[in-house]
Length: 280
Image (cartoon, rainbow, N blue to C red):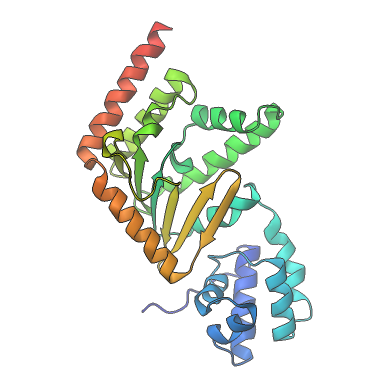
Protein backbone atom coordinates (compact mmCIF):
# COMPACT_ATOMS: atom_id res chain seq x y z
CA UNK A 1 0.00 0.00 0.00
CA UNK A 2 1.48 3.41 -0.93
CA UNK A 3 2.60 5.66 1.90
CA UNK A 4 1.22 9.13 2.56
CA UNK A 5 1.73 11.54 -0.32
CA UNK A 6 4.22 14.32 0.39
CA UNK A 7 2.53 17.69 -0.07
CA UNK A 8 4.24 20.98 -0.75
CA UNK A 9 2.61 23.25 1.85
CA UNK A 10 3.32 26.29 -0.34
CA UNK A 11 1.45 24.92 -3.35
CA UNK A 12 -2.04 25.80 -2.14
CA UNK A 13 -4.05 26.68 1.00
CA UNK A 14 -5.43 23.15 0.99
CA UNK A 15 -1.95 21.63 0.90
CA UNK A 16 -0.90 23.91 3.76
CA UNK A 17 -3.86 22.85 5.90
CA UNK A 18 -3.40 19.18 5.04
CA UNK A 19 0.30 19.15 5.85
CA UNK A 20 -0.27 21.02 9.13
CA UNK A 21 -3.14 18.74 10.11
CA UNK A 22 -1.01 15.65 9.61
CA UNK A 23 1.91 17.22 11.51
CA UNK A 24 -0.18 18.22 14.52
CA UNK A 25 -2.14 14.95 14.58
CA UNK A 26 1.06 12.87 14.57
CA UNK A 27 2.66 15.13 17.18
CA UNK A 28 -0.39 14.56 19.38
CA UNK A 29 -0.01 10.80 18.97
CA UNK A 30 -3.44 10.40 17.37
CA UNK A 31 -4.43 8.07 14.57
CA UNK A 32 -6.68 9.31 11.77
CA UNK A 33 -9.55 7.38 13.35
CA UNK A 34 -8.81 8.96 16.75
CA UNK A 35 -9.00 12.47 15.30
CA UNK A 36 -12.07 11.71 13.22
CA UNK A 37 -14.16 10.28 16.07
CA UNK A 38 -14.96 13.60 17.86
CA UNK A 39 -16.03 15.08 14.50
CA UNK A 40 -18.14 12.03 13.64
CA UNK A 41 -16.13 11.45 10.46
CA UNK A 42 -14.09 8.44 9.39
CA UNK A 43 -10.35 8.09 9.58
CA UNK A 44 -10.31 7.93 5.78
CA UNK A 45 -11.94 11.37 5.68
CA UNK A 46 -9.14 12.75 7.86
CA UNK A 47 -6.65 11.14 5.47
CA UNK A 48 -8.35 12.82 2.53
CA UNK A 49 -8.05 16.19 4.27
CA UNK A 50 -4.37 15.56 4.93
CA UNK A 51 -3.54 14.81 1.31
CA UNK A 52 -5.70 17.59 -0.09
CA UNK A 53 -8.48 15.54 -1.67
CA UNK A 54 -11.22 16.95 0.58
CA UNK A 55 -11.90 20.55 1.57
CA UNK A 56 -11.83 21.50 5.26
CA UNK A 57 -15.02 23.18 6.44
CA UNK A 58 -15.09 25.96 9.02
CA UNK A 59 -16.79 23.88 11.74
CA UNK A 60 -14.16 21.18 11.25
CA UNK A 61 -11.39 23.78 11.45
CA UNK A 62 -12.80 25.03 14.76
CA UNK A 63 -12.82 21.49 16.16
CA UNK A 64 -9.27 20.79 14.98
CA UNK A 65 -8.04 23.97 16.66
CA UNK A 66 -9.73 22.83 19.87
CA UNK A 67 -8.48 19.25 19.77
CA UNK A 68 -4.95 19.97 18.59
CA UNK A 69 -4.32 23.21 20.48
CA UNK A 70 -3.43 25.05 17.28
CA UNK A 71 -4.45 28.52 18.50
CA UNK A 72 -6.87 29.26 15.66
CA UNK A 73 -4.49 28.22 12.86
CA UNK A 74 -7.04 26.11 11.02
CA UNK A 75 -9.87 28.64 11.32
CA UNK A 76 -7.64 31.47 10.06
CA UNK A 77 -6.42 29.54 7.05
CA UNK A 78 -9.70 27.81 6.25
CA UNK A 79 -11.08 31.10 4.87
CA UNK A 80 -8.68 30.91 1.93
CA UNK A 81 -10.34 27.66 0.81
CA UNK A 82 -13.64 29.45 0.31
CA UNK A 83 -12.26 31.28 -2.73
CA UNK A 84 -13.31 29.25 -5.77
CA UNK A 85 -14.36 29.87 -9.37
CA UNK A 86 -16.99 27.18 -9.01
CA UNK A 87 -20.45 27.17 -7.38
CA UNK A 88 -20.32 26.26 -3.70
CA UNK A 89 -22.05 22.90 -4.23
CA UNK A 90 -19.46 21.86 -6.85
CA UNK A 91 -16.24 23.47 -5.64
CA UNK A 92 -15.03 20.54 -3.55
CA UNK A 93 -15.87 18.04 -6.28
CA UNK A 94 -13.98 20.11 -8.88
CA UNK A 95 -10.92 20.20 -6.64
CA UNK A 96 -11.10 16.45 -6.03
CA UNK A 97 -11.55 15.87 -9.77
CA UNK A 98 -8.24 17.65 -10.41
CA UNK A 99 -6.45 15.11 -8.17
CA UNK A 100 -8.16 11.95 -9.42
CA UNK A 101 -6.30 9.26 -11.34
CA UNK A 102 -9.56 8.00 -12.89
CA UNK A 103 -13.00 9.53 -13.42
CA UNK A 104 -16.09 7.58 -14.39
CA UNK A 105 -19.25 9.51 -15.12
CA UNK A 106 -22.84 8.81 -16.15
CA UNK A 107 -24.44 11.86 -17.77
CA UNK A 108 -28.24 11.68 -18.11
CA UNK A 109 -29.00 15.09 -19.66
CA UNK A 110 -25.94 17.19 -20.50
CA UNK A 111 -22.46 16.67 -21.89
CA UNK A 112 -20.12 16.40 -18.86
CA UNK A 113 -18.34 19.64 -18.02
CA UNK A 114 -14.89 18.25 -18.87
CA UNK A 115 -16.08 17.56 -22.43
CA UNK A 116 -18.02 20.73 -23.18
CA UNK A 117 -17.01 23.17 -25.90
CA UNK A 118 -17.20 26.92 -25.40
CA UNK A 119 -20.40 27.20 -27.45
CA UNK A 120 -22.09 24.40 -25.54
CA UNK A 121 -21.00 25.69 -22.12
CA UNK A 122 -22.14 29.22 -22.94
CA UNK A 123 -25.58 27.97 -23.95
CA UNK A 124 -25.87 25.96 -20.73
CA UNK A 125 -24.88 28.85 -18.46
CA UNK A 126 -27.10 31.32 -20.27
CA UNK A 127 -30.10 29.07 -19.67
CA UNK A 128 -29.08 28.60 -16.03
CA UNK A 129 -28.85 32.38 -15.53
CA UNK A 130 -31.04 34.08 -18.16
CA UNK A 131 -30.70 37.56 -16.62
CA UNK A 132 -26.97 37.44 -15.75
CA UNK A 133 -24.55 39.99 -17.19
CA UNK A 134 -22.47 38.78 -20.12
CA UNK A 135 -19.33 39.21 -18.01
CA UNK A 136 -20.72 36.73 -15.47
CA UNK A 137 -21.38 34.17 -18.20
CA UNK A 138 -17.87 34.75 -19.57
CA UNK A 139 -16.37 33.96 -16.16
CA UNK A 140 -18.40 30.76 -15.80
CA UNK A 141 -17.45 29.59 -19.29
CA UNK A 142 -13.76 30.36 -18.66
CA UNK A 143 -13.81 28.34 -15.43
CA UNK A 144 -15.42 25.38 -17.19
CA UNK A 145 -12.91 25.44 -20.05
CA UNK A 146 -10.09 25.71 -17.51
CA UNK A 147 -11.33 22.50 -15.89
CA UNK A 148 -11.07 20.76 -19.25
CA UNK A 149 -7.31 21.39 -19.24
CA UNK A 150 -7.13 18.19 -17.17
CA UNK A 151 -7.35 16.39 -20.49
CA UNK A 152 -4.20 18.07 -21.79
CA UNK A 153 -2.26 15.28 -20.07
CA UNK A 154 -2.28 12.41 -22.59
CA UNK A 155 -2.77 9.62 -20.05
CA UNK A 156 -4.36 10.81 -16.81
CA UNK A 157 -6.86 11.00 -15.44
CA UNK A 158 -8.40 8.00 -17.16
CA UNK A 159 -11.81 9.29 -18.25
CA UNK A 160 -14.76 7.00 -18.96
CA UNK A 161 -18.20 8.45 -19.60
CA UNK A 162 -21.58 6.96 -20.35
CA UNK A 163 -23.85 9.41 -22.15
CA UNK A 164 -27.56 8.85 -22.07
CA UNK A 165 -28.97 9.12 -25.60
CA UNK A 166 -30.82 12.21 -24.33
CA UNK A 167 -27.44 14.00 -24.20
CA UNK A 168 -27.06 13.50 -27.95
CA UNK A 169 -30.64 14.50 -28.78
CA UNK A 170 -31.04 17.54 -26.51
CA UNK A 171 -30.26 20.59 -28.68
CA UNK A 172 -28.00 22.74 -26.53
CA UNK A 173 -26.49 25.60 -28.51
CA UNK A 174 -28.44 24.77 -31.67
CA UNK A 175 -27.49 22.32 -34.44
CA UNK A 176 -24.05 23.85 -34.99
CA UNK A 177 -23.27 23.81 -31.26
CA UNK A 178 -24.35 20.18 -30.98
CA UNK A 179 -22.33 19.15 -34.02
CA UNK A 180 -19.28 20.85 -32.50
CA UNK A 181 -19.49 19.25 -29.09
CA UNK A 182 -20.20 15.77 -30.46
CA UNK A 183 -17.27 16.03 -32.87
CA UNK A 184 -15.10 17.15 -29.96
CA UNK A 185 -16.10 14.05 -27.99
CA UNK A 186 -15.50 11.82 -31.01
CA UNK A 187 -12.05 13.34 -31.52
CA UNK A 188 -11.08 12.60 -27.92
CA UNK A 189 -12.23 9.02 -28.37
CA UNK A 190 -10.21 8.63 -31.56
CA UNK A 191 -7.18 10.10 -29.79
CA UNK A 192 -7.61 7.38 -27.12
CA UNK A 193 -8.05 10.09 -24.49
CA UNK A 194 -11.59 9.10 -23.61
CA UNK A 195 -13.73 5.99 -23.33
CA UNK A 196 -17.30 6.90 -24.27
CA UNK A 197 -20.44 4.82 -24.41
CA UNK A 198 -24.03 5.73 -25.19
CA UNK A 199 -26.96 4.35 -23.22
CA UNK A 200 -29.75 4.13 -25.83
CA UNK A 201 -33.38 4.96 -25.18
CA UNK A 202 -34.24 1.39 -26.19
CA UNK A 203 -32.70 0.08 -22.95
CA UNK A 204 -35.64 1.54 -21.00
CA UNK A 205 -35.38 1.74 -17.22
CA UNK A 206 -32.01 1.39 -15.52
CA UNK A 207 -30.42 1.80 -12.08
CA UNK A 208 -29.27 5.42 -12.57
CA UNK A 209 -32.54 6.91 -13.81
CA UNK A 210 -32.72 9.36 -10.92
CA UNK A 211 -29.66 11.43 -11.76
CA UNK A 212 -26.02 11.92 -12.71
CA UNK A 213 -23.13 10.06 -11.11
CA UNK A 214 -19.40 10.75 -11.00
CA UNK A 215 -16.89 8.32 -9.46
CA UNK A 216 -13.35 9.45 -8.70
CA UNK A 217 -10.44 7.20 -7.72
CA UNK A 218 -7.14 8.35 -6.23
CA UNK A 219 -3.73 6.69 -5.90
CA UNK A 220 -3.45 7.51 -2.19
CA UNK A 221 -7.00 7.92 -0.87
CA UNK A 222 -10.32 6.05 -0.91
CA UNK A 223 -12.66 6.72 -3.86
CA UNK A 224 -15.38 9.37 -3.87
CA UNK A 225 -18.79 9.58 -5.50
CA UNK A 226 -20.40 12.85 -6.53
CA UNK A 227 -24.14 13.18 -7.06
CA UNK A 228 -25.59 16.34 -8.57
CA UNK A 229 -29.10 17.76 -8.75
CA UNK A 230 -30.69 21.12 -9.49
CA UNK A 231 -28.34 23.63 -7.87
CA UNK A 232 -27.11 21.02 -5.41
CA UNK A 233 -24.30 18.50 -5.17
CA UNK A 234 -23.16 15.89 -2.69
CA UNK A 235 -19.72 14.34 -2.36
CA UNK A 236 -19.83 10.93 -0.69
CA UNK A 237 -16.96 8.96 0.83
CA UNK A 238 -18.85 6.37 2.89
CA UNK A 239 -17.36 3.06 1.64
CA UNK A 240 -20.70 1.22 1.52
CA UNK A 241 -22.36 4.05 -0.41
CA UNK A 242 -19.46 4.36 -2.84
CA UNK A 243 -19.56 0.61 -3.51
CA UNK A 244 -23.28 0.88 -4.27
CA UNK A 245 -22.65 3.70 -6.72
CA UNK A 246 -19.83 1.72 -8.32
CA UNK A 247 -22.28 -1.14 -8.86
CA UNK A 248 -24.76 1.33 -10.34
CA UNK A 249 -22.15 2.55 -12.80
CA UNK A 250 -21.15 -1.00 -13.73
CA UNK A 251 -24.76 -1.88 -14.50
CA UNK A 252 -25.19 1.25 -16.62
CA UNK A 253 -22.04 0.33 -18.55
CA UNK A 254 -23.41 -3.19 -19.08
CA UNK A 255 -26.60 -1.74 -20.60
CA UNK A 256 -24.80 0.79 -22.81
CA UNK A 257 -23.71 0.24 -26.41
CA UNK A 258 -20.12 -0.80 -27.02
CA UNK A 259 -17.49 1.94 -27.41
CA UNK A 260 -17.25 1.26 -31.15
CA UNK A 261 -21.01 1.37 -31.70
CA UNK A 262 -21.26 4.44 -29.48
CA UNK A 263 -18.61 6.28 -31.47
CA UNK A 264 -20.43 5.48 -34.70
CA UNK A 265 -23.67 6.85 -33.25
CA UNK A 266 -22.02 10.02 -31.90
CA UNK A 267 -20.45 10.76 -35.27
CA UNK A 268 -23.66 9.98 -37.12
CA UNK A 269 -25.71 12.32 -34.95
CA UNK A 270 -23.01 15.02 -35.32
CA UNK A 271 -23.27 14.69 -39.10
CA UNK A 272 -27.05 15.06 -38.92
CA UNK A 273 -26.63 18.26 -36.89
CA UNK A 274 -24.07 19.53 -39.42
CA UNK A 275 -26.51 19.05 -42.30
CA UNK A 276 -29.23 20.78 -40.36
CA UNK A 277 -26.98 23.73 -39.53
CA UNK A 278 -26.03 24.14 -43.20
CA UNK A 279 -29.70 24.41 -44.17
CA UNK A 280 -30.43 27.24 -41.73
